[in-house]
Image 1 (cartoon, one colour):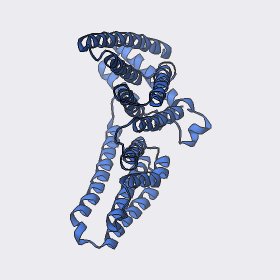
Image 2 (cartoon, rainbow, N blue to C red):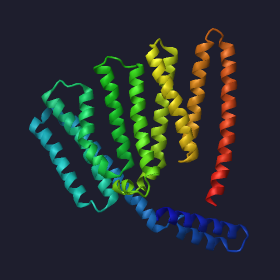
Image 3 (cartoon, one colour):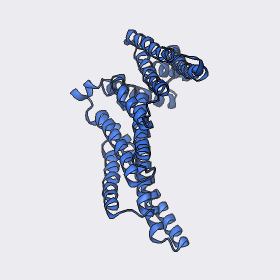
Length: 342
């Protein structure tokens, strides 16, 4: 239903622009009509924008006030007061969030504050009792404690925050337990975490739209937020590019080379195919193409490392050739997709 409304507005907007270009209607009337269609914000939209900004800034100032208050008064407060203040803050925020659950934005911001205060509570507990746990334990516990709140929030920034915590846990576990801050297995683990996150997001947003699963997660509209997929996709392919570069230039085992080669031959064609034929996203197609160019340059310089000039020439020609082909295809796809919409 929401998609049909958007398509109707798009059609009405095109009709208005056509009538305006033919001077059939006056510019003032066209502007008024575009305002009613939501192309130009009206007073109600501006009030909504101000409401969102004030609520967001208030939440940010509140959480910053909590952190700075503890940082300034840490030495003079009893441990019971420290834990009591954070716990009391969580109870107050939780109660307000529950009361305002009917207001979507207030509910989402309240859950975001609860997630941040959970981290503050864990950090306070760890500083008071000096448990001796590693840093990855802190982030892993933080992730587990807020996963339910994130799941019910239907708030994309909170999902990104959860993904950041997962990646941080993986990096710290590799460094503090496995004693490797850079290795094939670390990059591989980060690649798989972000690939799984991107796959779940796109699956729910595009392949389960309108189904029972889509309804279970609260409808697909909030999952249509493309900046989330772009951000996760950029991070995933950046990590994958670093993984390939590490394997190409470092002395690694044949098993590692084989695993990375298989994943590379799967992830790049699969991603390009899905974003070209199903999801239709030029941004992530461009990201994949850029990653392929960088990986190709890695391979060229590794094979012709003794002749830097020749390697640079071949890599430059490859980059130009792939860029031209990708741009040519994207222009064609844009025209094709617009024709399909009409």
